[in-house]
Image 1 (cartoon, rainbow, N blue to C red):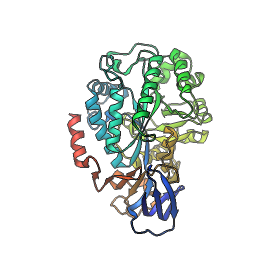
Image 2 (image 1 turned 30 degrees about the vertical axis):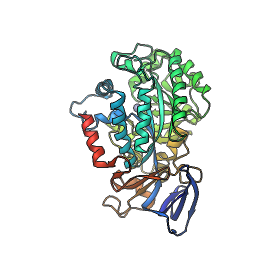
Image 3 (image 1 turned 120 degrees about the horizontal axis):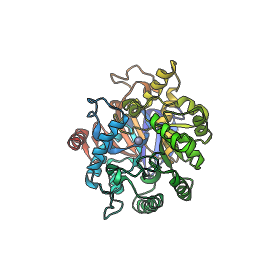
Image 4 (image 1 turned 30 degrees about the horizontal axis):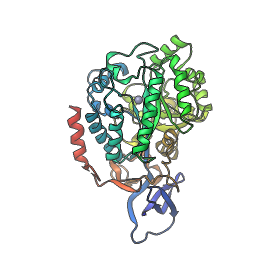
Length: 446
Ligand code: ZN
């Protein structure tokens, strides 16, 4: 039993003083008390303690492109070509090495859980590895080395666009049919459950997009996912670009959201990623379904996607979560801040999301998206904590409850996952100084 004590900590949507958190052997919070002194043997955490961030959308290998795609102009679609080039050279070994470093960067930044939207399943020509889950297990091992909770979203990717065959570069993403994908997903789920404790690595489902899953396959996918039970998360990239909407309307007569609704795929298990270009009807459908919307503000800005209607979606009944997607930056605080900043730029108004609502998007929004008991300092939840420095050059003078508007990942002093300190004072408990992690990232990007 480890007991943590913090002078100030985020409880129930506000900052409380003198907080003791008892963590049990399973890494869950066993008791929380506010207004109590520390006792001998307590682990005193520095700064202001918040729940760890829950990153609801990641493609680990996209980190390879950071700071390397900005000199040629272009669009989302030209950026995608560069990304495919990186996907083509991944091996299980390099994937594990890259993901370990990226997940370590995430943990150091204050993301303590990640939902990995994974589609690089097979060998570059599309044939299976001798170990059919080689790429998936590479991610699981990476997450354990880095000390982050992983929800591995195994992705159905069958088409280069509304039934068109996969291109040569997409061959390794595909399983050939929705049935074959479901079969591999079921086997992966069993394998992961055998090898990892629940909550450390878990498996969910994803449909890459309405572009990548032919209309006829949507019903098969929907039935297969339903058979896994209500707790199985389902994620989908939705309406990130106007071109997807136009093609979907031309092919099916529906917007992407309407198409998902037609096939019974809207509901509380669904996380729609981006949801940038929506109609009023789309917003109402997603809200009425109590879906989660994973906004990825840093990626949406970087790729020129646009500013999604997060405020309207929340007002309609959707839950807002955050993801770092292509990792142009890894910083839960800045990601949360950019959600509000996008709203201000689009609306001409301030305070569209309060600081408490931004913290919720950064934490419990991701918990809704992954189904994990994380994102809050409460009895029964995993003891995942980040300590933020309120006295740095960036944060000095800020109110503790508004640190989400001033702090950055550089102000994250200590990160605890499952009651174990993973990063403190610039050192990762397993991987050593973060400067070494940075050297790994530099070497794999070249
Ligand atoms: Zn994505």
